[in-house]
Length: 324
Image (spheres, rainbow, N blue to C red):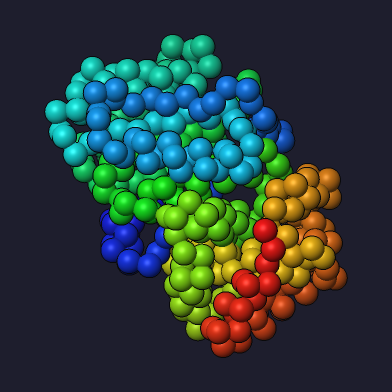
């Protein structure tokens, strides 16, 4: 979301999968528009002259998510901004913006032009700036709705981190096949799976990275804030939003793990198979209570607050109790 902040955080050696992206208003799926299982793979829009390793890393990360969750979409992946500045050609930028804006035009020339001069031009501006950024956007005014994964100047990201970034963003694609969940669950779930699946691929270390997340989560606790304060990032005060990263991503990843730990099976693999379908059936609050075997969301919040007070060794031991 804020590129300067992103680049600062990329210097943290142990952090596998931080995504500084708010769930913006455009991500709120009106009229229950959801992504679905697809036969076709994601469509990649990039400069074919780019022979660097970065586009391949993006694809491998996204494919790791697809292998685990299934091929949801439709998905368009935009990769722009390059180490070789000659690849930032006007011809490529025109083609990318045309592809990007056709989904926002809905057949109306004026809307496509507005996109070209607005969001499309902003994409190119970011690419030329040299700053790294990546995010998912949901386009709900198309039929069917679609997801976009945008990777800008991917060479600015650390080597293994770019893989897990792809996993994180594709986890959001999967999540958008189901009704909305709170910000802490959406971002925390994507962080957890990025590290969990990333470790399987040799790109991350779950225990190490979750320990780093806990350090950051404790800073929000010191401010007397908890995940209950991060149910909707668009509705929180500036004072709370200051801890968006700590509450949504860091504490959220641990809360997501605790939810699995408190479930009957403690199985990570059952989350996409059972928990998210339960969200679709009864809503996230009842799904959380039923899945984590607590009375209600407030009871879960109290359990998580108590968990945060445990020594780090005990918190990490909880991860060992999770099953494949």
